[in-house]
Amino acid sequence: MTKLNHLFLILICLSITGCAQLFSEQVYVLVDQEISQKPVFSGVIYSIPEKVSVRKIVLLGRGKVQNFDVYVRDKRMNWKFVKEVQRAIEFPFEMFVAANTDAIKIAHRSVTGKGRIETIQLYTIAEKDE
Image 1 (cartoon, rainbow, N blue to C red):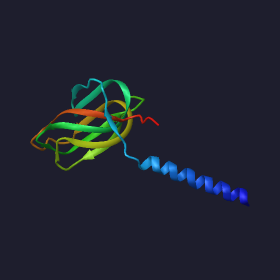
Image 2: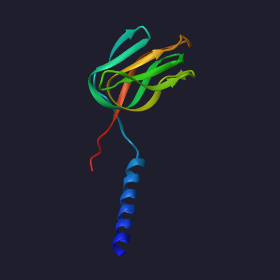
Image 3: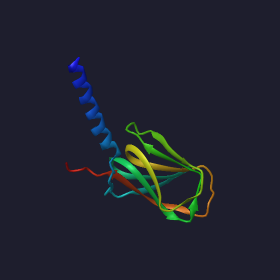
Image 4: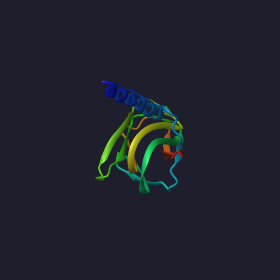
């Protein structure tokens, strides 16, 4: 019975330290790759030369825009829906995602708002030195 108690205490300690890592503040680093833009019928595709682990997308532009969807390209080269934005946003606008991708697509559902998205910034999580 004491072996089970020891095991139980060890599991509790491990879970507490693991949860502390989850709740620690994350440091975002700008992805240092050139972002190219390609207009398509439904919006704009923003791509980079190689796949990275994207954790945050920042939209930069002017004015206010609304009614657009955000997609990321997956490893099978398919578009995966990430976020729907219906309300009017102001720039800069941050979105938090978890994707390993080389392209983001902003698809406009309708032309509303008096502004435009000019470019995006992609961020990843910094590696922490232990």
